[in-house]
View 1 (cartoon, rainbow over the protein chains, first blue to last red):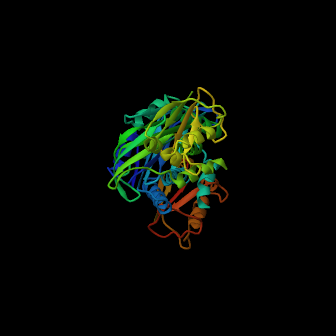
View 2 (cartoon, chains in turn red, orange, cyan, blue; view 1 turned 90 degrees about the vertical axis):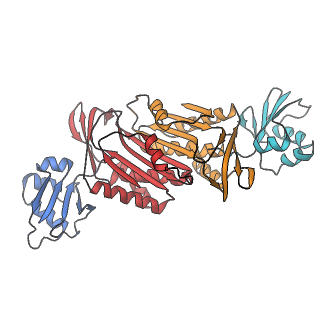
Length: 150
Length: 150
Length: 84
Length: 84
């Protein structure tokens, strides 16, 4: 597995090629990209600054991937999460999961994203038309993560 | 929406950039790539040849995307399906869905893939160590498509 | 006349990918067309027997036995699909 | 000594990102540390009140009030996470 927390941008094609690494047992690759929107809760967003907890972040994401591998048939998984100051249209996060079959790839990819939203120690601060503010945790994200515990 | 049936390969980065088209309302992009595996039902696969029903294929995929847009909040969707002769490690299919939110993007992307597997008129013929054979439709694919009807 | 199309395993088994067919009086449904073709015997009878796992479309839309078929229609027979 | 870390809104409200703290006798849990800090009053009392929506980790693992804390540990307080 690969976990990277970085300021720089990423290219999904290059990352998928590296993750596949010529493995001919892979039949399915599910991926997700999160991007910065120009509007949040009705206010125009000019920038978004991401802070994290170095060390714990990587550990918690590795733990999430290990959990996914225990639940589904996962060949490999990659998480890249950006930090620092981003603007609308910028990529924030990439999750890629390779598997023999698509059902496992989709489920593991969504599981990892839901947990990234609710467990990985990242915090977002928005610069909006109404000033700077910390983004509040969303109840809908907690609900999305909760359903995997059933 | 964009639907392409083509012999040539595709690049997911370029396709996602085209689909996003600078739209700052997009927050989530879910995608899926299907690739040729080197083994199917225990036999080594040397090539895979994909045949389709020109006209009906495009129509049925557009219909699937329209259904997805009716069920989830989808900004845009792209399906590329290759035809002709492919070999292990080659990309077969790409589905990309953009949305405001990740739950809708994941659900619509998986829905489109499940229907592609069970409804779009494509047929695969494998060249294996045991000779050439048409790939049989999988009961598990029917089950995956069936669950969306609940 | 209707246009008949055959794909994949059916195309190979029937030895052709398309043909034109004059609709006889009284044949007005997909199942009527199927029975007409199956009556040719041999691979036709075998591949288009009612118990076989084939699919069909009329004018590029998935069809069932009761789907109406009329002059000018495009009728296709093919195996269960295996794309994606 | 333990290392204390504060992130995001808590870091700003408390005016610092880290500090070293000598663990007094009898303070052996995360809630003990929280109560010690809250007793400083002002923003500390406000941000680390038991009813507030903060989270905590001990040695980089999510922790609850009963989680043991001992000399050498790294203890972090932060708001609910908002990554992804």
